[in-house]
Length: 373
Image (cartoon, rainbow, N blue to C red; front, side, top):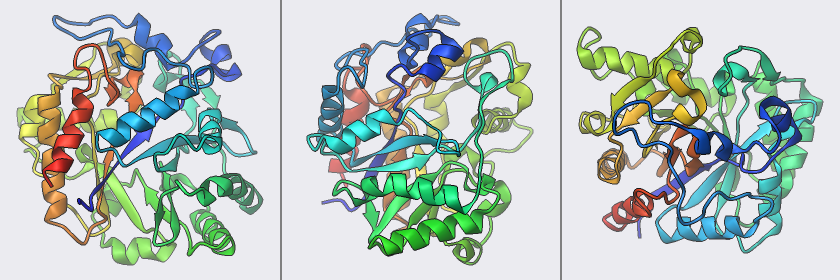
């Protein structure tokens, strides 16, 4: 039995909320943009269409979460990482699917949370204006305590992922927290008070400077257990002036967005199959966790300002995943997890769920790779 665990991000934006009704129109969900997508070039696979699970609504069809869990577990996915949107001042969005899951023990897949601590701006969510839709705020100890107390029933659930009796808790941009030491101390102390041995933090976005440091010294000082980086955020694989080097730099700017998206008028298009054949994965330290992605095409959300990986197929995805597994096996002291982005980010063309073109093949890749371990 493999010790390597595969965890997939889970997006809950598949039910209407008043805020999305206001920003995008009544009844908006992730499917709204997916359905209206158009091909932007010859043989561009758009609109993508779900098959087995259909255009589900997580609140109107609670049984979907049971089916998702069954599909995932049958095909080698060991857990979901639910995106969790807490903006400060006890304001949350899209929290109901996780709350529904907590009550329904038939949804038997292990899970944890990723606090997506980022201000929502129109420019990043498909609008042509840079206005703030909802701001991420950080308001000190009392609010961190309130947030932890909201999370505690999830942490105590038998399905919640624990590492050495510590709840695994991802934070999208840990470095953005202005009083980081306070935040970590509050969560750590409250976790211990609740009967755990602390909180197991994973930061999903760390600056280049910090990535190359000996983080056993640096991140240990703030209680950071583990972090991972998406592959393209690592050091450059190709010479900067080469064609591949220029493409890699463009990808970096997209995956860690700059203001350039506001002025771009045509999509960035790269070849997924060629890219994975050139991957040369090296772990920078012993706290690194790989993040892999089967596909990416966010044109349903961003239109001509999108990033598109053409030729993303299950066969190419398998090469990508196998490379990540091989590197992890060469680093047995690193955390034995591979993070998959994502289970169901359909408007970014980034998903494992069955679609009309490939059916269950995205998922079967994980099963095949896992069985070969």
